[in-house]
Length: 448
Image 1 (cartoon, rainbow, N blue to C red):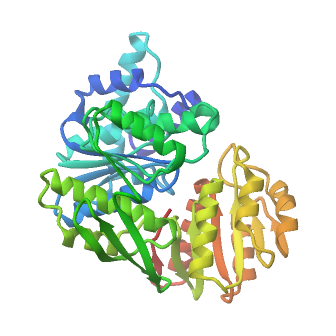
Image 2: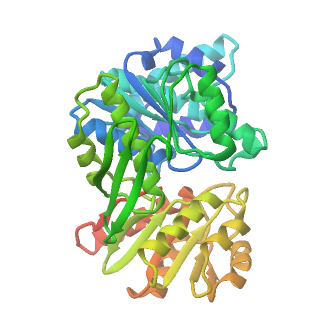
């Protein structure tokens, strides 16, 4: 298959939807020779922040001179973004060649009367396969959904990371916060250390599971913490403390903006030091400093400056994400007027998300995420109208972006938020707009 043919096959696999379970992926990995067992892994889950933490850890490995892979989801523009080697997406040619190989084994499974793997399972297998083809030493693996029955959960990691646990995907993960926490705790393996920023009842479930698995547990707050000390709009100043590690107020510059990134950075730094203490001496304090100062994670409280217009791009897609976005906007841009360009999926708690994010003097433009689950912009606009001073709705993303830029007029902060199915495309349009104008891209990446 060439790249377009591989994308066509992935579209065909979408018909199988989300089907949790490990039987299909285990069989597929067995046919591939279990490539996921040929390198070290770090497994990361959580309701929010798992992408940011994964990106920071991948950055630490790179700064340490370690040949590493990074598997994440979803992508913003291209499927190749999901599988990175040493910070760069794999090529379209390599992506297609890998899927061609995997398709051969999928067809063997079907011939044997087994179920067809889902699209996400095939992509996960592709990531594991390509990492082995590149002979990586480590791979940072971000969970797709939940943990226990997620297709990434066929690895035996060096460290398991659970960023936090809040109420999302309840219809798939059991319907309660307890079941969601239990599912995420499912990545905990026998004797493998666990780092978490979870609190409350989810933390107790994680603590119980770690005890059952004889896994050392390191908890944000009592065992380590990161404190915010300032932000200039482009870089945060933070300080890490851990009495367990004998570290007191170690200052860092954090390239990722957003108040929630402070906790994410704490989890990342603690994980990095545990890897060091576990025998990976190439990971040093200097490497951690460099990684936090340089790390980027597109569309998560990412700042772009496009033609004199300040833009924040954030894929906040649930109430907890909106709380983090609102807190970050209020902390970093407290007095600036805002134009928000939003698009939300209909299976989200839209009312809570809008009430959390919007201020009475906000201007809002609503448009349609590129998803079959997208809520109509007119529906969201009606809900937003009582919460802000002005709202407009456009089905077409290009028209919505043009109108939002016009309303911001380089004087107000333009915020693109909501589903990653929307903000990824809008971000690409902005970058293309900048490139068409003949100016260098002005983005500084920062995330959730």
